[in-house]
Image (cartoon, rainbow, N blue to C red; front, side, top):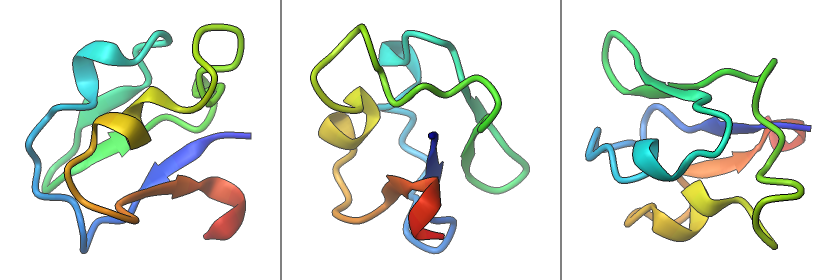
Length: 67
C-alpha cells in the first residue's frame, strides 16, 4: 500500500521529505504530496512509515486505504 497526506492537516514543514527512502514525497501546489505509485510505507527500510514518525501533526499522514 501507500501513505497519503491529509491536505487540511499538512503545515508544509517538509520534515518528512529527507527521510523518505523512495523519494516519494514532493512539494505540491499547496502542501506536500506522496506518490502512491512509489511509496512502499518504508517496507524493508524501517519498522513503520518514517514520514508518520517525523510529522509533527497527528493524523496528517495516513495509509491510503483509510482515504
